[in-house]
Image 1 (cartoon, rainbow, N blue to C red):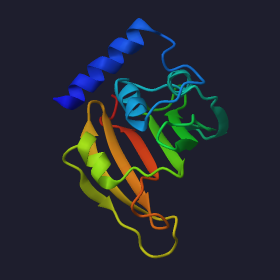
Image 2 (image 1 turned 30 degrees about the vertical axis):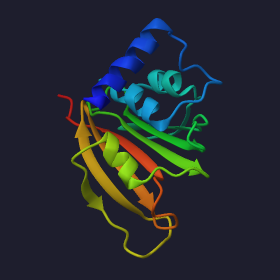
Image 3 (image 1 turned 180 degrees about the vertical axis):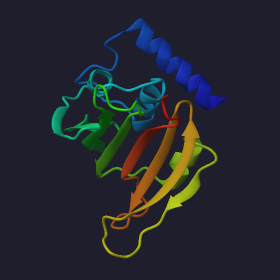
Length: 171
């Protein structure tokens, strides 16, 4: 119930003030998550708008366009260091979008913090001991999205990445 109240509050704030999430304002990861989750489909333009970030086409193949950029400073002593956004090429078989937000900074969002916002997390990935960059990943589905939360081996108590993947294949 608390989550839905937060969602409604943020959506009302955004509707009342279209530039409420403009560049220069800091927000929490949870505010950004709520904003992104409310999208039924993500585009390069919607990501750039929602994160106040510039995305650059880095690569492409016949199926996928790969965009990258850096995101905003968060008010959790963290920042979105890297944005990896993938979307089908025009004319390719329709598939959903894929977004990875990589976090860095002195702040720490713990697994318990994530669980306060997303119930029903399941272990989806474990490190294999090859690198301190490997992540333990927890997954859930919310609204239109499969969400994954990654905790790197080099800092296992702190959230390192968030993944949005389309929950359904688009036909």
